[in-house]
Structure formats: C-alpha cells, structure tokens
Length: 331
Ligand SMILES: [Zn+2]
Image 1 (tube, rainbow, N blue to C red):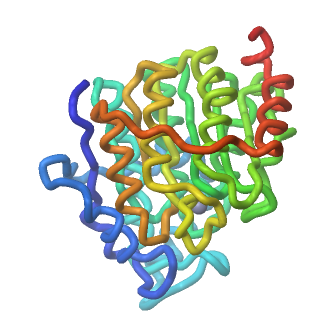
Image 2 (image 1 turned 90 degrees about the horizontal axis):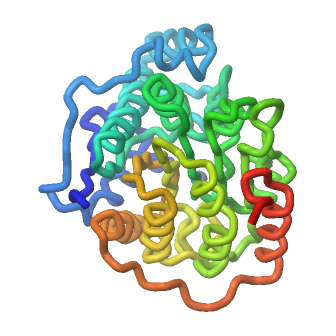
C-alpha cells in the first residue's frame, strides 16, 4: 500500500491559548515523530460555508465568524471552548483538511489530518468541548456527494456527540464510537442506536474507566469491525483522539501507543480501504508515539497484539451491541 501522508495545518497557531489543554503546544508535541517526508501541506484548504452548512446551522456559522471578528483577545463560546480573532478561519481549515484527508483516502492513500481545534463535540447550533466546527462530520457530509456509504470510527476517549447527532437519522453513515462511560460529554450510551432510517447505524461502546488495549481489541474484533464489514463503506473516516492513552490527563483509560496501531490495522483489515483520520483529542506525553504507531500500521507494519484479556464488563457491552444491531444479528 502507498505510504500514508500527514496533512499539516500551517494556520493552527492562530487558534491558541497557552496553558489550556487544547493548545498549539500539544499539536507540536504530537507531530514530533512524524518524518518530514510524510508531511503534506495543502495551501488554501478550508471548508466553505456551504460545506459547513451541511452540518451546522447557517446562523451558528455566522455567529462564530462575527464573535471572532469582534475580538481583540481571547473569548469563550462556552466554558471549555475558547476563541481567538482567527479561530473561525482556523476551524474552517481544520475541517477543510479533514475533507482533504477523505479525498486522499478515496484516491487510495491513507491520510492523517493533524488539525486543531478538534471537532467531534461541535453540534449543529453550538460549540462544545474545545470544538467549533465538526471537521469529521463536515468531511463525511461532503463525501456523501461522491460516494454512497461513509463509516466514521471514533476512538477518542470522549463520545462524539456532535457527529452522532449529525447522522443519527441516516443509513448512509455508520458511526461507531468507543469511549469511556460516565465521562464528558455524558452521551453515547449503548441504547443510542440511531433513529428512523438510521436505526442501527450508530454503535456506541461505553467502556469502563481503566480499559486496556485488550478491551479495545475485543470491541473492535467483535463489534466495530464486523459492523464495518457488513456496512461496506466506500470511505472510512476516523475521529482519531489519542486521549485513551494511559498517560493522558483527560482520559482515564489505560491504552499504550501501540494499541492505536492495532486499531488502525484492524480497520484496514475489516474494510480493505485506506483510512482518512482527523485529530481529535490527545493531551499526554505518549501522544506522539501513538501517532507514529498509527502511521506504522497504515504503512503495513505489524502492530503488536494487545496483551491480556478483556474485562467482563467489556464483554457484556459487546454482547449487548451484537444482539441489538441489525448489522450484526445475522452472525
Ligand atoms: Zn477526547
């Protein structure tokens, strides 16, 4: 398979609040293991207001622009989510680069958009949890013009409430999230399975705090990958938050960097498709190693198997999801 590429975002420093967990420093730290030859810059990549409006209300898009333009320093869209005078542009470029990653994947090359701010908490009408615009959802919505079916796998430790909401009623987008239960933002229980035509096309695996790579492997092998294989996506997007790492200050899970390579490899094997990843969370010192592990897997490297056994609570979540999923009930 072709070498993966890493899409970099030159304007990311314009959205920054030093000392905040979601700062430019954490992106720079995450990139330290990425070889220069894999880095690709796409000048001018930016989601148009029309592309944003597939996911966000036009009044919200305009409000973000106006709030940023009126600033002289740092502002807040909610208690967690800061903005700078340039945040509107930076969030648009993050979404634009997620869409570029999707274009690369559709052309046969896996791509990891290393972008910020993150996106998966952003809802149709409001910012939330460090997120302004939902980059992965914007990319998925735009891709539905090009292909029939899009899968989104979200391994960030937090549930992607905004992404789930964007596609809750459609059978053209399969949203699979593995996250920590009873954690921010509080959504993503396993009985949230989609509605109307989308019933069964949302799969949430809320795992207990302290879950390990063995738990994640079990959920991927028994739920996420079989669902992907049954769904047959034309495009696979990943909301790649590396905050389930054991050393992450916001996570509370117990993954090691190699576990992210394991998940990427399982997705490649299940779908036979290149992956389009976009950065979500990831705030700890192990983040750079996790990114390298993902890139190694995308390049065909052999990710080491997760050691240990899944815990009983993880098996129960997986059994419940398999029993309740129209995509999985023929197995
Ligand atoms: Zn997160």
